[in-house]
Length: 116
Image (tube, rainbow, N blue to C red; front, side, top):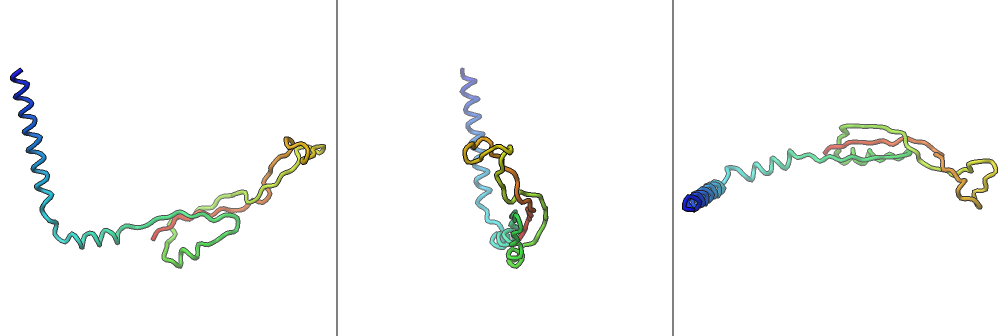
């Protein structure tokens, strides 16, 4: 029983000593800390991904604002859909189950990865 008490006291003292040394190290001021902060803020770059679909194109607004295109990608995309009858005898107004939706116009989606 006595050994357990001694071990717990030693453990408590080592925890106390290790916590004191780390708090003392934090008190020293860093040299030129304001200058380092300003440099780090300037080094951080902002990234954004934007998409334009079906003939829309507003990338020039971003380029005029100082953004640079890092990556450009294109995909096919359905712009509009239309409903058609599934069979010739189908009346879409009376029987909603025979209505089929199909792509009407297919366009292009442009995806830009921008950095500022």
